[in-house]
Amino acid sequence: MAKIEDLVKRISDEKLRDEIAAEVRELKKHKQFGLVFEEHLPEMLRLPKVAIRVGNLVVQRDAPGNDLWRVTGIKGKKATCRQPINPGKYDEEKTAEFPLGELVLVVSFGEPIYPVLTPVDRIARGGPDKPWHVLINADNYHALQLLLYAYERKVDVIYIDPPYNSGARDWKYNNDYVDKTDSFRHSKWLSMMKKRLLLAKRLLKSDGVLIVTIDENEVHHLGMLLEQIFDNYLRHSITVVINPKGTGKINFGRTDECALFSVPNTGTAIISGNHIVDLATMQAEEEEEPTGDEAAESDEDEPALLKEVDLETWDRPFPPEEADQWELRHARRRGNESRSGFKTHEGEQ
Image (cartoon, rainbow, N blue to C red; front, side):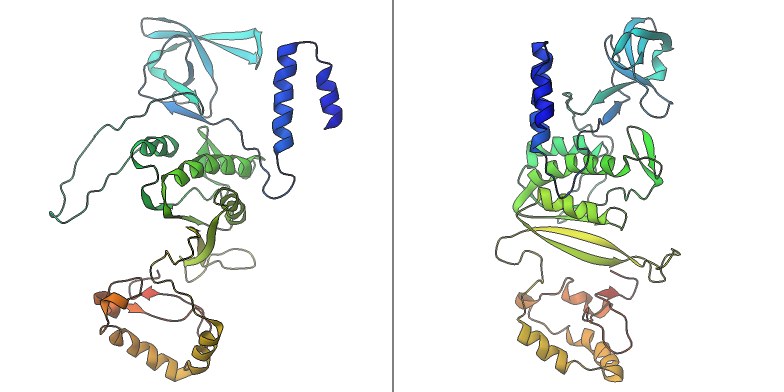
C-alpha cells in the first residue's frame, strides 16, 4: 500500500491524482478479515414505462443483460444511439438506429429516481374489524426507499425470502441470470442484499425484528453480513423443515432450511413465548421427562390439557383455541424419535 501511495504522488494530473488518492484511502478502510466481497458491483434497473429522451442510457427491450446504448437523437418513432466498442474509448464508437418501442430506459443505483405508488386494483375487506393490507409490486430496493418516507422506525417485523443463489439460474442481476459459472456469483448476491438490508434496518422499530429464510448456499455468508449490519442485535438460527423425506443430494438428504432472526438486544424477551430457563430447571425437566410408550401417551394428552389455560400467562406461539391442532414436543431427542418442534396435523411448521 505504501508503494501505491508513492506512485500516486507522481501523477502529474492533479484531478486524477486526487481521485485515485481518494479511492486508495477507501481501500485502506476495508477489513482484512471477516466477510470480504466486492460491495460496489454496478446494479442497474430498467424503467419500461418512462419516456426516453436524448442523453438517456437505454437497452434493447428483449435483449438479455445490459448492453448499454446512449441516445444521441430522436426523430419520429426512431432513436439514434451510440455505443463505445471499448468502454471509455469514445473515439471507437458504433452507432445504430432503433424503434423507440424496442428500447427501455436504464438507470444505475445512485442515480436519483422518484418512485410513487399508483393504485392498480382494490379488494374490499372481509369485515370492519379486519386490518388493511397493501401489496406493492416494485423493485424491492426502491419500494423500501419509498416506504422510508412514511414508516421509518415504525415497523415491528420484516420477513424476507431472498433468492437462494443456488446457481440454478433462479435469480437475475442486471437482467442476466446468475449461475454457477459466474465467478462473482456470491459478490453480486451479497452486494444486492447489503443495499436492501441497510434500508430495512432503518424501517425497524427499536424492538423490531428481521427474519430471513435461506438455505446452505448462502447461509454462512448471510450470517456474517447480518452480523456486520445488525452488529448490536442478538442473532438466532431456526431450523425450518420443508421436506421431511429429504432431498436427493450427495452425502446428505437435506430436509430443512434456516430462518435467521436478528433481534434487538434490549435485555428482555421480544419474541412471543420466549423465556429464560436456568440450567437446573432444564436438568430437572430432562430427568422427569417420560420415554418410550409413556412419552407417546403424554404427547397425546398434552393438547387437551392446554385448553384450560390462563390467557394472561399463555406463552405458546398459537392461540389456545387451536391447541388441539398442535403437537408439542421438546427439541431434544428422546426415545427412538427424531428431533422436532411445533407441528400441526396438516404439515410441518
